[in-house]
Length: 260
Ligand code: MLT
Image (cartoon, rainbow, N blue to C red; front, side):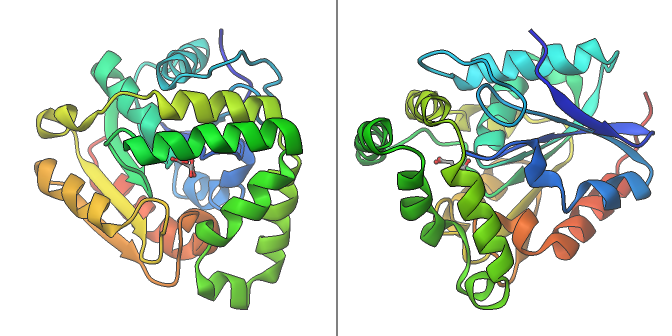
């Protein structure tokens, strides 16, 4: 079933896939620049987030990939550039496996193609238990210090507050379902060497969730990919350094030969 989505602008479609545990609204700082540059932005809400109120016990990355494909098909879109940040990147790599012909270009931001380590899987199970009993404020307290750079904490208290409210306000059941889905996601690294479309890797230099090692590994594996690193940005690089993020993204979009 198609997911609720935000859509704006006209031109070649650019599909923005959000991070955990946010929603399509995480692209609020970027959409206008992308549409002003002559592209149509589509940003779906994954199950349980934003305006998407429906979710089950586990939200797998493959289920979300199917939901995204159905969403853009419902708009009559056959091909698009896909931008996935963190969990959005995990979903994008599942779309790549299932429907490569839909993809005209790829932007992987602050994400990894690897599956979780055993240690990370255990940490997610533990987090699910604590969010189930303590609610989503547990997520905000635990995740936020790792998500944002020291520069963002020092210079942008408003963003810290907004994100804290957003994460604390997410549906704990949806968050647990997505945590379970991320924990069981397959390793997508085998796909990287065969990518036949242009790829931009965009990473915050101070990202502590995924990091520059994951970025360098992907850059080495994907033929012809470009890695751009955003100074003073952490994991939510598009929100922390929107102008720099948009600059790299729009230069990439303009470099593609896009026609419907
Ligand atoms: C995200 O930002 O989507 C999450 O931090 C991803 C993860 O927990 O692996």
